[in-house]
Amino acid sequence: MRKIYGHQLIINQPVEDVFFYLGHTFENASVWMDGCRRVVAQPGYEAYGLWLGKRYFRTMAMPFRLFNLKKPEKCVSFENNKRFVMTTEILNVQPHWNYEMRSIGDNKTEFNYSVTVGNNGLFSRLFIQPLFLWTIKGRLEKSHHYMKTLFDDGLVLSKSESTAVV
Image 1 (cartoon, rainbow, N blue to C red):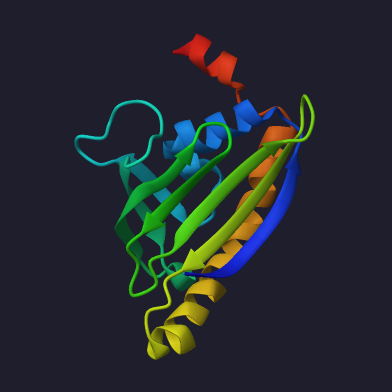
Image 2: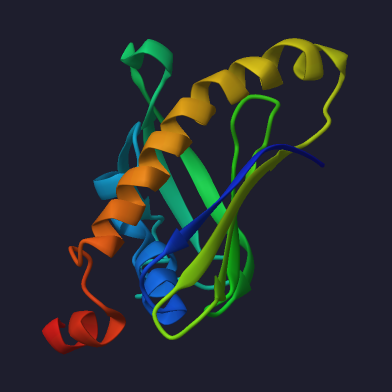
């Protein structure tokens, strides 16, 4: 695996709330993630929350938004209120989307995000992976800036507010 993308943000919300929104309500990704059309749990995995092994289908817009593509996705690493990693079966890339959160105060969370890919042959490294990076880089930067704005402006319900609504 090799890292092809990463960045860090400071979000003005407690780590529990950030993790809850990004992980346990992962189906909301289409609200804040550019290019993400829909995320639904696969049959048999509909139970609430995120856990190791949970599976989704993610429908995403392809480059230039010419068409949508529905791909399976799976949680391959999970540490509550700290980190989760999702992987998607895309071409020969098999990206791992790494969401890491760390509390840096009562109401501040350091959000570290990275994407790693399998090193699956010369053609993939020279052509497929650069095209993939070109596609995701702008989307991720736009998405995470928007997600941070939602948190910082108080537009995302806290974990306690969300569970009170349910």
